[in-house]
Amino acid sequence: MKIAIIGYGKMGHAVEAYASERGHAVVCRLDRDDPWPERLECEVAVEFTTPATAADNVRRCLERDVPVVCGTTGWYDRYDEVAALCRERGGRLLTATNFSLGMNIMFALNEQLARLMARRPYTASISETHHIHKLDAPSGTAITLQQQIVACGGRTAAEVPIASFREGEVPGTHSVVYDSAIDTLTLTHEAHSRAGLAQGAVVAAEWLASARPGVYTMKDVLA
Image (cartoon, rainbow, N blue to C red; front, side, top):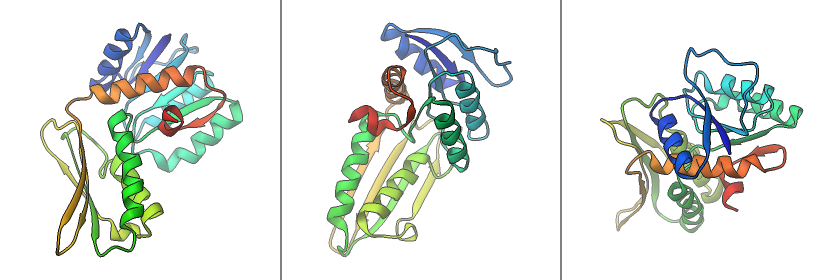
């Protein structure tokens, strides 16, 4: 499979390394300030950039009829606009707040746990820690966890506060905590490197390359 990488930072390099392990060819690398060609000669693009540039990067891919996997978070104020463009053009877009397979398992567990804890005498909270280079806070992953608890656990967003920390080069740690006077229950996912995100993004790209037109998430990949 021919892949274009949009955003050639640490995540872009990690995606390239894992894609090569899977036998794919990275045929285009576009970093910030690089001019975009009129055509992208690839089967799918993988985008990891910044909240300020992600939506426009996705638009450029869709306008060139290239399916795109977007792993950037913090740009969702423009999500409806971009999703509408994708549907209008009959394109393919896959977004996720976290591509780690382990984290997506935690998403599933988080929904189940939220249902079990609904109306129980516990307070709920979320903490997330990332490296100092991460631009958005709270993380998209933490927001997803919060939204799941609100949807499945009968709580308001205000009842599930998120604490964000930026330390060193921490790849990413997310914890959901239910606390009471009697005990504490904690559900945690700790990434050891960016490899899990890269793996999931490449698996998503493989899936999207042969998918029908539409707007997708990792739930569709893992279904």
